[in-house]
Length: 136
Image (cartoon, rainbow, N blue to C red; front, top):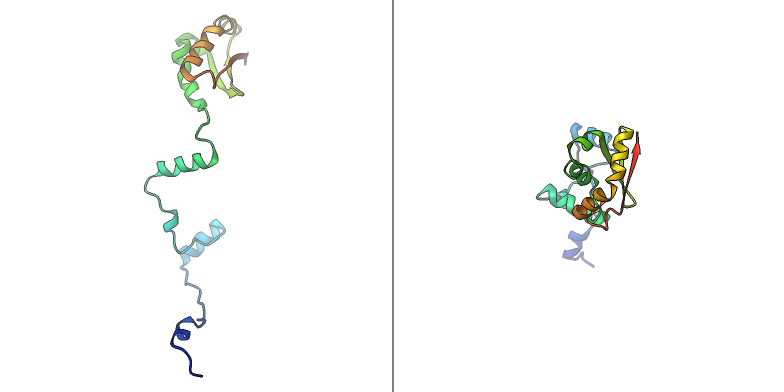
């Protein structure tokens, strides 16, 4: 039986490994893996698209940004208090603020309701439900 024409194209060809230059070998040794030949799947137009899709995939897009609270602290409490206190972060919807002096701590405890009201007006009640101060 003579070989069919389409068998000629389907026969197993010996596979040769692509030659990789010294640069590619050094990068692969540094990274611990070879870079794929086709990198089109990894190409993106803008870094903003990559960050947005990554945040969405990880479920972090809806997370509250604590850096906004730190940036707004000066506007909410005023100049003197912001120089003597600093927000540490938000944990379980509680804003933690570090205070330098006991006198400022006393003043902030008296202003606690006003500060909480202003922070909730700015960032929403679903993100901040309480403010706590500590001397340190």
